[in-house]
Length: 499
Image (cartoon, rainbow, N blue to C red; front, top):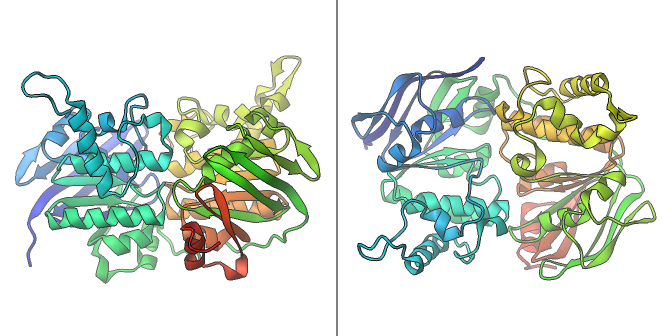
């Protein structure tokens, strides 16, 4: 059956200072299809979609929507033409409620009075949240949500727009398999109603599950467009990176040694319930669980970002008094947070400032900062981590997600901490950047560091970790050794079926 073309993006070009982001890229979307857009970080995917969403203006080329040539000067123009976008980098209004964020600019009013009908707005918001099986009060403020919940609210907002085209840029980067399955049910409903979805994701298994066609971008150029049934994962990876990859996970060679860190009976009222575990020198300990299990809260508690009600943190037999992050850092603990944009980086600062910020004491003598020493260390870290940047002076906000994440790693590697807590360290980065991050993690383990890794991606947990503890509703429900790891076993513990 010949499908109706609803969108044509023809010969799109876009240039930023020093970078040609898009070079003669064309994209065609048919009515009711789920079309994947893939490529490495910096390939041009988000730039192309921001042009379609009216956030960026194209330098040359044309947009044809439903047979009509259109030009968007702002996101409101795109929305009025039926184009909505779920952004990879979340942009909620933190002091407004969930309902207010979902219906911002489209609030229901009482008759012709112009007065917002708040009761109706809350009821309508709950309808869209229920479609995604999100059990959160729509009157709750956004700042009280975690990253995964914010992402689900953004998805609910896009669905509420009743758009003809919905762009989903990494919609599952912070949510677990269960929430992902709920999203796919909703996508299939949208597909039945002839809504077209442009789906950007680095999780290729998702793309082969939900999408109809796939377009590959590399270095700002279109490489290929294929029907999902006529291609495979290996071919797509090769087209994305321009070379074949032998493996997704590097082989670990570290041999775990003596216990380095022990957590005993950590508790926070209503969040964490008597959690105990240990991690050894050279070990990668995974922490798995569904959204709301308490994984991030546990990491923040160990690092001093959250106050615990009870429990002990013991390092090599010594009881630690960690009340705030500086206490953790002084005792050799570091945290790579789940949201690099808001808590891991200073986006308006340069590469050098971000890498050195946690380690300035080591470069300061008699109140003077050794700028040359900082610069040398920064340049060494850029080379060591293969950070793609024009130099130490480049503003971090202008780098791709994968390179930003490497800078977060570089900042903590410079402190030489020996307990490294990673909270979803590969969220929103491409397959090759992931491999580079995995290699860094394995190298740290080989050097005797203790790694605690939280991840929402089951293959990542199984492929990297020596041992896994699983959490459900703030409790540890199971511990699984390397040889027994499987998605089924993790899910049984994560859902509370097995303990």
